[in-house]
Image 1 (cartoon, rainbow, N blue to C red):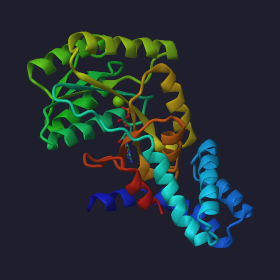
Image 2 (image 1 turned 135 degrees about the vertical axis):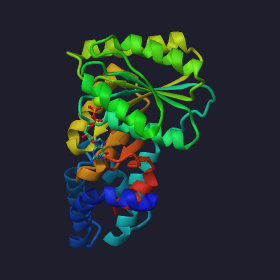
Image 3 (image 1 turned 45 degrees about the vertical axis):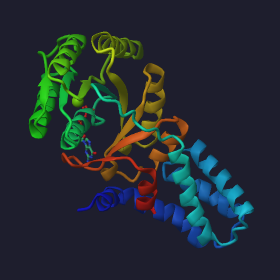
Image 4 (image 1 turned 90 degrees about the vertical axis):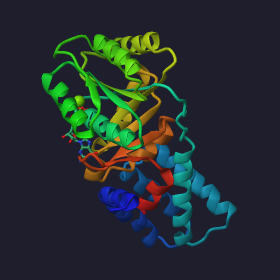
Length: 301
Ligand code: GDP
Ligand code: MG
């Protein structure tokens, strides 16, 4: 299956939800007037786009309709797509493409799909010809380490691990040393999402970043927050919370294949001013895509 078809299939439930709610309104209300805008706003909120972002989209749509003298709701539908894509593209940032080691720290609460996403990313980077290494810094449970090992084997990349319960910082220390010694291009660090409280988690992540800074001062660093799309507005709150804990460079949004709540991507991009970098559209090793706002909107409608 092609890239775009896979995205479309993964987004099917979200698309159905969008069609039912948003297109539904556009079909019922043929004339462009206040009533239509109100209904559309409501429909976007129901499609998990979030209140703030839905209001912003409708404001822009209203302005555009006035300026371009749009009177038919069908025409408005095209404009709506453009505005959503525009909104998301405003927060896209290009990854710096420096040579040398890149360390990616993957954070997020338990069960959102961190380890799975790391496995998929490892495979993706490897297939791009990069030397990839993994660090099992989620040391809470032996099962978490084993799970990452399975992914390392699957994608044929090296993994640095310690025993369950060991200090995540020392895992990262060893992993960075190994990555330097083996001339790795990318080191992806799996972290635990379960720390007793916010302060605790903040300290832990700070400590890890400090070790990376000290041991590999020339490496580029990226912190990616993993969010589970099936949790809808809860994913948005997690983005806010983690934004207070760590400096986040981008989002990996997982499980878009299993949810009708994919509209939340739009809210995350817009309200958190954070780029969605990758999206998960299944549990398999190939079910990870670079996020592209234009393709996303195209697949949505
Ligand atoms: P972690 O606790 O954050 O490391 O989460 P895991 O990587 O262990 O994933 C939790 C569950 O979510 C697993 O059963 C994964 O197979 C599943 N999962 C992760 N990403 C996706 C995705 O994009 N689509 C689907 N359908 N399931 C996913
Ligand atoms: Mg995990």
